[in-house]
Image (cartoon, rainbow, N blue to C red; front, side, top):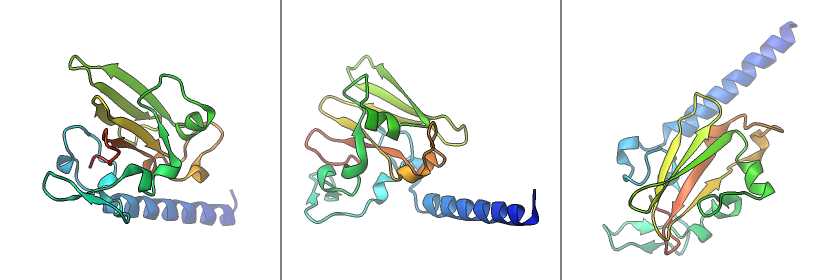
Length: 164
């Protein structure tokens, strides 16, 4: 390896590590998530779009998924066992496992194929939908996602609001 290649590699590592730190520094702790979500996915930090409404519980603003910045790059994964080509592309680097629970809800695990990223686990109840958001397809190679930490699932209530 030439000296220039080594310097370029070190610079790339610093940029990726710094970006990862910034991405994770502002995420809420796992203990602050509701029991329906056992992974810390960063959805709680989403900016509130115009038109958000107050929810009946606690007065916090409920974000309408269709109006959110996530809607345009999200793929429905909870209601089907097969995925179209766009959804398959978004899920590169992940494995999705589904299990019906005794209470009729569906447990969905999104498992990153890179072991350093945590499994995201969701419980989807009747009427709810789970979407997979591909934040940036630019980090995907032909068969893998080089930075899966920017991709996450979004649980949407029966009335179309993001479940915090």
